[in-house]
Each structure stands twice: as structure tokens, then as C-alpha cells.
Amino acid sequence: MQCVVFGSGEVERSELSAGLRRNLGENSSHVLTLRFVSANVASFDVACLSLLCHDAHAVCISHLDAVRAEHFHAMHLRGVRLVVLRHASVSTALFDLDGLRACNTPHPLQLARTPVLSAHVVAELTLALVLCAAKHIPAAAARVRCGDLRGDFQLGTEIHGKTAGIVGTGKVGVLVASALRALGCRIIAYDVAENDSIKTLAGGQYVPLDDLWGQSDLICLHAPLVSATIHMVDEAAVSKMKRGVVLVNTSRGKLVDSRAVRDGVLSGQIGALAMDVVDCAPGVLGVDHEFTAIPDPELRELISLPNVTITPTLATRTRESLHAVCDSVAQTLTQFALGRPMDTVVNP
Image 1: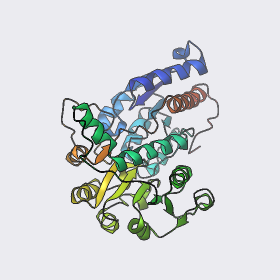
Image 2: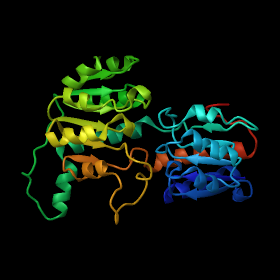
Image 3: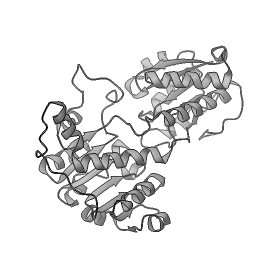
Image 4: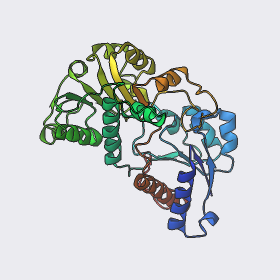
């Protein structure tokens, strides 16, 4: 059997291969062979994807990918029977599940997720970005690296005593709210389904979304990506925010309209912006653009601004998290290769 792994880096390839050996033994390649592709599925047209999936029985995709109905159809026609997502949640805004369900004859195309991602790793990076944005740490470090040791070029802001707005109060949102409360923040939150932990652990209160935009000195986005949350931070939302607000997004790039936040940063409406996820064209993420211009002008302009910090999905890039994700993917692929029931299938 063969599995094509899309959107994979060097470290990930090593971990996945090691995970298969742990599950299938040193001769794992006799049972299942991995073929690695650096780019995501969304980077390819149907014809190219069809060639890449030749003789493949399974496909493994990144959480940064966006798979349309025609992609699923091309995989299915090539004989692919399993798609494994290296992430805990399956976003209906990124993955055409209706298109997936239509691939059901002569065999169903199954989708499996990887439910081992720790909420703590995302919460930790969120706090790091909050402090980076509020204290202008990346810009200050860059100036020191250039030999400028003056400390008076840009004033930061204190977190203590400020109002922090948490949009999305699942596990990550609660952890971030609790940590910011410990730093002396007043916590307000918004979610379509209230979580009692916001009140009991973070001493927070729920408010309407427009009130959260208007009251918060600091906003952290932790909402899931569904049709209702695409570009929830748009021009109208930015206009309702406090002038000089600190905005942090470690959830999904499409929660934010890049043009709206760019204009907000340039006008001073947004005082500092920090994001570990971005909304950009296919083929931009996961690629080294050191010697070529980033082929997304809005992202390129955002990166150039001194009060903007963008990281390349670092939240899950820890030794512990990568090992857990790759080991879980390897277990799912092992179950598939040996014809055993798979624990993580979304559409059995």
C-alpha cells in the first residue's frame, strides 16, 4: 500500500516514518510506503493531483490545506480510500464534505482526523504573541540585531488592568482567558455556546460580539472556522474596536479579512497585530520565499509593518506535539493497512 503525504516538511517526514516503524516494525515499508510532497493539495490542479495519487491507497493532508470536491473526486478515481487530516478539527469552510460524501462507489472515501492536538500548545503561543504585540518585542529585537541598542523607539503597553476579549471559548479560549486573568486582565467573552469555565476559572462574563469589539483593549481569536465565522473580523468589526487595540489570532486565518486588518494597522485603529495563521492564496504557506517575493501582496505588506508579528503556524510546532500527531497518524495508517477498524474516522 502507498500513502501520499502532502504539505510535509523534513522533520514531519522523519517523525511519520519513525511512527510507522514503531507500529509496523522495521520492515514497515513492506506493508505501507510513504510518498512525500512538500506542497499542499490546494496547490495542484486536478490533473496534477491525479498523477501524484497514482497507485496511492491513502492520502495524508495538512490542516493548512483546502480540499475541494474536485480534489476528493480525483483522489477517489485514482483508488484512494482514506484521507487522513493532521489536525483535530475538520473545518467545513476548508474541506468540501459534501464532495467527500459523494465519493462513495465502488468504495467510500473515508476521512480521518488526528484528535491528539493539545490545547495548551496553542494557548502558550497565544500568550507569547500577546506579549510580543503589546511590548513590540520582535521589532525591538530586530533593531538590536542591527546594532541599535536604544530603548526609546516605541512604547509598549501593560497587560495588567486591561480588558481582554476572548472570541471562542473552547479549551484554548478558556486556557488563555485564565492566564490573562492571572496577569490582571478583566475578561469578557463571546461564543454562540457559553462555557461555564469562563466564569468559574477566569472570572469572565459573556457579552454580545459588538460589545466585545468596543470594550476590549486586547482581543484573542479562538473561534472555529465555519461559514458564519469567515472574515468575522472585517472592516465593520475593526471600525467598532477601541483605537490602538491589540489583536491576536491563533485559530484560523480566514477568521480575519487581511485587507481590513491591514487598513486598521495603517490607520492606527489596530495598535498591534499578531497572527500565527493567515488567509492567503494556495501555495503561499509552507513555502520558503526567501529569494522570491511572497505571491500575496496583502500578506507581503502586512509582514513589512513594524507593529505586525506573523509566525508560520508555530503553535503546533513543538517536539511533543509533532511527535503525538505523527504517532496518531501512523496508528491510523497502520489500522488501515492491516484492515482493522479505525478509531478516528469522521465518516465511517
